[in-house]
Length: 577
Ligand SMILES: *[C@@H]1O[C@H](CO)[C@@H](O)[C@H](O)[C@H]1NC(C)=O
Ligand SMILES: *[C@@H]1O[C@H](CO)[C@@H](O)[C@H](O)[C@H]1NC(C)=O
Ligand SMILES: *[C@@H]1O[C@H](CO)[C@@H](O)[C@H](O)[C@H]1NC(C)=O
Ligand SMILES: *[C@@H]1O[C@H](CO)[C@@H](O)[C@H](O)[C@H]1NC(C)=O
Ligand SMILES: *[C@@H]1O[C@H](CO)[C@@H](O)[C@H](O)[C@H]1NC(C)=O
Ligand SMILES: *[C@@H]1O[C@H](CO)[C@@H](O)[C@H](O)[C@H]1NC(C)=O
Ligand SMILES: *[C@@H]1O[C@H](CO)[C@@H](O)[C@H](O)[C@H]1NC(C)=O
Ligand SMILES: *[C@@H]1O[C@H](CO)[C@@H](O)[C@H](O)[C@H]1NC(C)=O
Ligand SMILES: *[C@@H]1O[C@H](CO)[C@@H](O)[C@H](O)[C@H]1NC(C)=O
Ligand SMILES: *[C@@H]1O[C@H](CO)[C@@H](O)[C@H](O)[C@H]1NC(C)=O
Ligand SMILES: *[C@@H]1O[C@H](CO)[C@@H](O)[C@H](O)[C@H]1NC(C)=O
Ligand SMILES: *[C@@H]1O[C@H](CO)[C@@H](O)[C@H](O)[C@H]1NC(C)=O
Image (cartoon, rainbow, N blue to C red; front, top):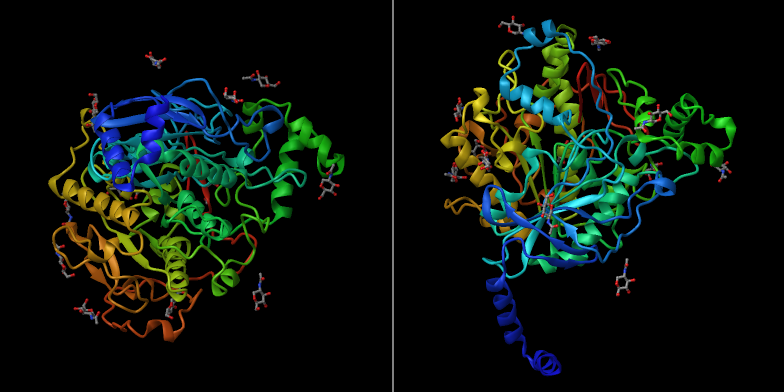
């Protein structure tokens, strides 16, 4: 023992590199890894036998009992974690009751559409408050000795969502791209964003931070590089990625950001007063008293209720705004003044790849149709919905990044394939979240009559995974030369320039550039880039498609009233942004 320790200490740097190579070639798929959470044993991923899969690793002390409605606490353990199955999903406000078959029939939903809606509604999930776990997919026996890491944050309007979703399985990205994929769980709804004036709020976002710290502290043992962690997330997960970029400036940890169809600017934040009102509505309903009952008494009473009764006491949301719980201004992790902070450069100035889908509304139209509400919304309404909630916030967030000299790329997703179509009439197009099955290489089961993935879809999936991994490997420069053999690379985003990357546009791989104003020229300016920043840009006036005028402008603080809001409830399903 002593001799080998001495030998190790005497090793010059090149020999340490050799030792790393040695360790890699010695790697056994699924081997036990020592972590802060204890030794974790894994197994071969189901469809990628060389990928080691570690599921359900706890990163926080279970947030139960007195830790319900409290900030997450770091978990350390010595007992073996059996990483062969996903951990529990965090309690989510999914609602199970009848859906009108007549509405369903007239909504023109495809078989893959039903699969999508069921997955988003978390059919078949196992729920528990003891849900703060994460998952790792890695292939250390090949490639880079210290691999870049893609850390996935799911969406679901901060009300639903889980890492145990077949369309978020990291095995294929890890197999193909020489990166590690990590996905995390975080608390949702009242459990993640309680609103009590006497409790910490934004717990779900704190969970995400603690998970990121876990990855920094432990990923090297899985063959990862803790200095190259990129956060990626979609919808509320995209917003989470962006909230992180403003919150953790003094110790960023992460090297890059990929917010997909969600930013800190898009959906608005609740004020503490709004969240407290939601909290006391639920506490009163549960017999724990209201605002006049004494904050501490109410809080401790709420900790005695089981989570199912708490979920049942949530308001049923309705069409405009979820159940009232979500990111709330605390000026610690969620702020009232994102635009001011942006102007002051007060955020993590690390590379960003930001964008959204061509027809976000496609998913929400399907939901409205199942509710029997489709005739209540015009095409113009949905066009505004796309712009106000997704396109313009992404444009503004890209502007902010560019204006602060941060390497920035902007994309728009156009993919639509036979097994991703969710409604036939109207054509669902590239709906909200439709990029995820292609990115994660998930194919819905073909035995339900759903078509298999097409050649175009497979090629675009490969290109897509390559781009995300290229960003993670070298966030500042990687994409500049990425092009799937084309060699032209992706240009950094310049407002007004021919620099919007249109992914899967007309089924093409490659960047397929367009001027962003083809899609965002009618956005009210939220964050104008100073001309001095645009010296290398060009104004390209070849916009060939215009969008209807935005009808709501952004103001800081508080929630916007955006018509069809964060959460759409219907019968069996709950779908949230
Ligand atoms: C993964 O493997 C399982 C079991 O062999 C199989 O049923 C499933 O179709 C595979 N999925 C993919 C996407 O290859
Ligand atoms: C794990 O074991 C170490 C060494 O025996 C001990 O110091 C530590 O307290 C243990 N941690 C836990 C959480 O049991
Ligand atoms: C882990 O759990 C699986 C499934 O329950 C079981 O088959 C396996 O033996 C367990 N592994 C260990 C090391 O306990
Ligand atoms: C479903 O398709 C029919 C026939 O094309 C059409 O009339 C109807 O409007 C569609 N339903 C919805 C909700 O758009
Ligand atoms: C609970 O919060 C309210 C509002 O901030 C405050 O007035 C009250 O003193 C707090 N109660 C306790 C026990 O901390
Ligand atoms: C939760 O509490 C309610 C009310 O006390 C009770 O009816 C229900 O059975 C409990 N559920 C569980 C799963 O313990
Ligand atoms: C943002 O800055 C402007 C100009 O300095 C100021 O008037 C405004 O109050 C600030 N807004 C917030 C929310 O801090
Ligand atoms: C949609 O339909 C449901 C009933 O199916 C109704 O409760 C709800 O208010 C409707 N929403 C809108 C915006 O019309
Ligand atoms: C402007 O757009 C046209 C058409 O998309 C393109 O051919 C041209 O290269 C663009 N010019 C610049 C300077 O980006
Ligand atoms: C793209 O390819 C799919 C088949 O993979 C096809 O259904 C679709 O029509 C094509 N889209 C375009 C714009 O050519
Ligand atoms: C190659 O780059 C050019 C210029 O950006 C683009 O027009 C073309 O579509 C790209 N082709 C491929 C296969 O990526
Ligand atoms: C982004 O900056 C450009 C250039 O200054 C400006 O024209 C555009 O309105 C800005 N977009 C948004 C959404 O703020």
